[in-house]
Image 1 (tube, rainbow, N blue to C red):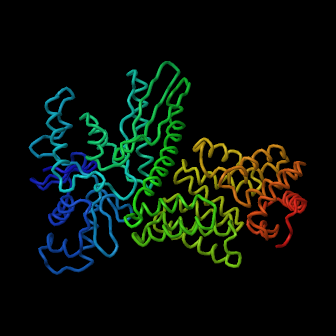
Image 2: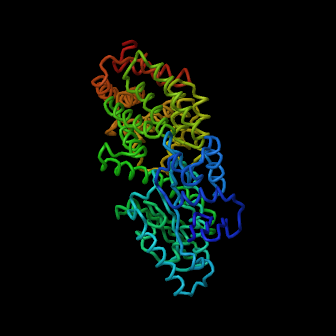
Image 3: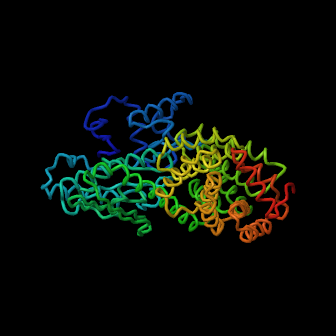
Length: 544
């Protein structure tokens, strides 16, 4: 038997470990441990079971077992930090979560067959399909990793142009490598995805063999200076298309626009998969939710703007942490909801306590996973609420460096810049945010903050347009209405300003200018005074 794991091959008969066809040194005991994990995928292997099977029930210390697990990870390019293949289950043991392809050792590797050797390819295809059918656990759902799992298939050129074919290969690799850097996704190595594609399997067969829920595919049409890219995201388990989009560009050199197109695709894939996982989590009974499914339910409630929704989000994030104490994104969610409590005026006397918790949770998230953009978002948001704008901007930029397609860090950058008199930065970040996610459900907050930047620039009429759009969003809350009120008052439309202020006071009768300024304040004194004067005219008292 040959186990194929990314660039690695594990030959059971010869006890060889190959990486890109090159033999690797591995101790017999480590090979035995690796083989036992490969033969028992997606099952928690306890310390006692590992000692009984691998060490033949000898008494060994915890440090010896830990060293062996570390060496096994190192042998297949895994680490304790990434845990891409071997996942530590706190207090229980270890679980092998890597996507493995089993090949009959009697059949040579597919890479040795010429492309026109149809019989040989059919033999391997049959072997692959039989492997999935005779596995102990044939259900593709139970074989899936906890994280959203993705395979990126090759973008093909429909008109077979040389430039289109090369562009498709580059685009495939770019999307795969960028998604693989995001810690909240499980992304199959491109070598495995492209290798399976040569066997002409169905999407369901590819999903079973790679152990993924989502397949990304696309095609390219290139004619002279015109390029059309069509991309599709499919949930194979549910047998439905989650998202599809077509991009058209005119360019002398299509490779100059490669980054622009790939960035737009990656950003939409991130948002679309997140929403798909949220929808899926709500179809599962609460008692059966995994850590990731609890997180996605919490994330949905986090996007709403009522105290009840924030409490529901808190419940699900804590459930996720109970199931996985090192779930970095759940800690980021807890941080985010603590700042939401301040914005929604849920506990005025405990604002500082909420702020402290927000900072602690965000820092802990990043201590667990330094590449977690949700952690940067939550930390930067806490600094923004504390009015430490330079720190907030620095954190937002750090999150963008980790993932320059993360729309939420771009939005945070725009908000902080708008409050910091950095009008050009705010404008560019607003444009970037809109391009990355043109239908983002959280844009109303960005629109409100940008309206404040426009007031600072003296563009009062434009500010009323942006603040009105925000205030008419179904998720708008009292601060959104207050911003719309003073924008219209400054622009000279007192009647409209009074209407927006009345909506704000209907939801928060005892609200005041002092309370608003404690949370949102512009760094420019002149702009701040203009806003306060306008709020007084609309009827908002200085003190509650």
